[in-house]
Image 1 (spheres, rainbow, N blue to C red):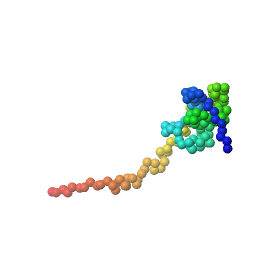
Image 2: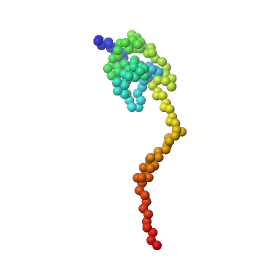
Image 3: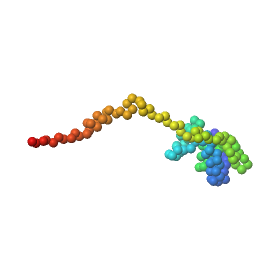
Length: 139
């Protein structure tokens, strides 16, 4: 199997970051790492397959390491004489409720039976707590 041809889309890292911040960082198809940083590459590839992580962004993220991206990715983004087009052909504006944001968790039902009742704990505490000693009273 022949390796796909690679291209160097940017002349330097600053040019790449400017393009990335105007395209991938604002696109609703993009995925951004949380506070814990990037997960393992196996997880990232799964995100690409599931559609959670844009394939073009994935290739560009790897391009920050190698300096090259696959030629097919450059064609999908759109090429000019000087490299990539100013705006990615797949770019879509992000809404506040779209993109990489997590879905909110459902609140817990606090009205359920035995929600805050732990009877076994009370019994264990009573068994472990030493009982006060009574002093003998002399008359």
